[in-house]
Length: 285
Image (tube, rainbow, N blue to C red; front, side, top):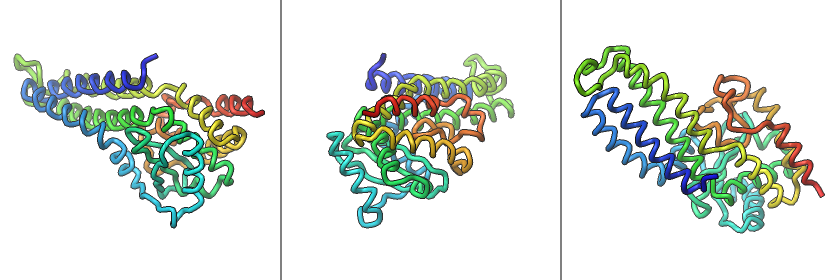
């Protein structure tokens, strides 16, 4: 299995290739050059700013210990158990209960929860969810998750550009450079979205959720509370879909925010909740 460093390097390299190919399809040789420059900027930006981009997507706001002392106290205790610095805490105004972690490393980590999760979980269940997210931080898979989200979103935008170039005929469809729209542009549009989904699947395997569950149970010393929380979150997220959930970032949440309302849920990187709960229950003393 690739290490997270190898996964990140591979993901960035493949993103560069895909963006250059889309640039060639849309604008020929000039499009390739522009796309190469864009890819270079995105490679740097996705490492340094991917967490900010994801937080901005969901209009998450940082909350202070004075605003939510209970959450900060739980995060501090769990971080101490995990042996990592205290992550910053963000809140998302959304009735759908969910949570995720992001950041490039444990020293720059963020834990974000929706307002909906505070309404349906008990204190112990919420503590279990926060422990799960700190498991992602401890296991250092938050960077690859954030980069995958940024990459997938950018490629979808560029694929859209290729589609419109194909629809309107482009400007170099029959030239010797092989650029422009037409058939090539349409072909790029039709294959890029599945490739982006495959990249996320490759970079964010289902095993990371099992590992974060196990780590969270260890940090909280209460696997049954996390198991109970997962059951509630699964049911509630299906009844109250997340308003701004995006396929590119769905893999980052503790439960799939697309469940029950999107075809993309068929390609979920999340393992079955029932299996996660069963594993957690088997961990009880």
